Length: 247
Image (cartoon, rainbow, N blue to C red; front, side, top):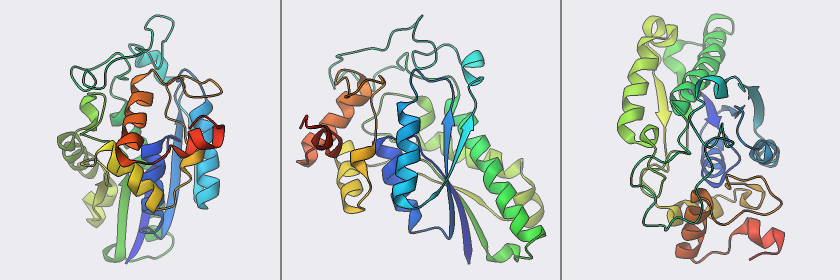
């Protein structure tokens, strides 16, 4: 079997861990990063660096128009909706916070699947690869345990999206090649994700999870709180803070 994959790489802890995981499981892997008008581009720079360190082909897609339609979010419209800070860890995950970007993962998945389908169709129709010898996988890094309550990070969402993508694709309809959505950390705690990233030798020191774009993580946004909680529970010093001399 020959496997083709697209991994969504934001430059954060979770997506970097999943990209390191996918690297050894896919023959042809592309890391896809979106610039969608988020409050800062620091995570995009980190994604580029992570892909380089992992030796994975990287594609940056500018979809900054997303903020025009998915404007009701602190991540795309911070002037109107301030990013929440200093929430207690036990508060996170109850209710859907203002950092949720409307239908972001739906759009991200569709574009990743379109890229993947193009590559696999080219391999079949131009390269002569037999459809029955091909695997197609999209790798994503949602987490349904230590997460911020986003509805598009749940297992049931990805099950429905797999069906939607297959029914809407030539790859499945004509060639019966499944489009698998791999979410390897969806049932892991943040501590388990940190441990996995370290075990995979992922370049966690070059990741960025903070919703702010300063020189050092703010330490107060939901993402910083969850990241700190994960490394603390794992008994591991955050490699990023070690590199920055803040551990």
